[in-house]
Image (cartoon, one colour):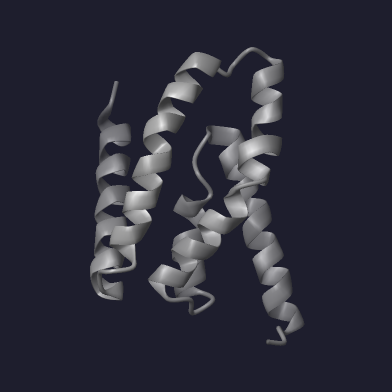
Length: 124
């Protein structure tokens, strides 16, 4: 599949923005990337989520955490414990995601983002 230059530039910019925000405030890039891939690039919800998960393996998993680790801001024990649950949760979540409709998946994603945003906005 051949991509137009504007699409290539747009995807690189989206990656830059999501990576910057991920490093800045510790969010997963999916919060930024999934909606943009769906609404601006025409991806299905399933494809946007799968693509985002695939790209996060190296940059977030290794490179993004280096600066936090160097400054003592990574709790290794907590990280390892979270990883135990995260591996199973990620597998089960992706299995569930591919079995539900695009519309339902988009609504689940939107509700999650809304609830998190409201909680963070009103938290003291």
